[in-house]
Amino acid sequence: MEQLADEFVVAVETGDLDAIRTSLYAPDAEIWHNTDGKVIGVEENLRVLGWLTGVLREMRYTGIQRRLTPDGYVQQHVLRGVVPNGDELTLRACFIVTVKDDRITRLDEYLDPAQSRCLDPYRPR
Image (tube, rainbow, N blue to C red):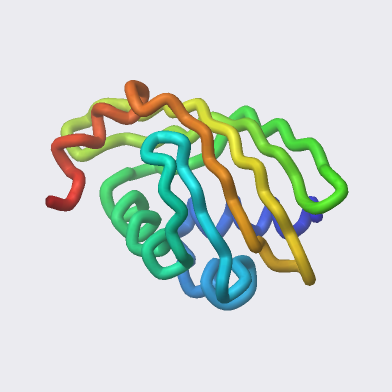
């Protein structure tokens, strides 16, 4: 479980969307965010991650704290990076991840949207 979680972090940080699609997410994985309460699928999530890794420079997870659960893990972290205008992103977040057959089947992400406002000018319209 720790290896899967570490691989997911590295794949997001490096923008390795193919690894996320083919070896980390289950084909029917569900991703939910507290900011809109909607469940999205793999391809929509990969579009968001592609946008994020394209906008942020020096994107990295710091302060990772992880606890394994019977069916996955919970991870607290700070997502950091630099937006195009030079502002620093410091986004505290939490994942609750469900895993089956060594693949992520559900990821619930909790974050404070106020901490990501510096990304607003760069969001796709």
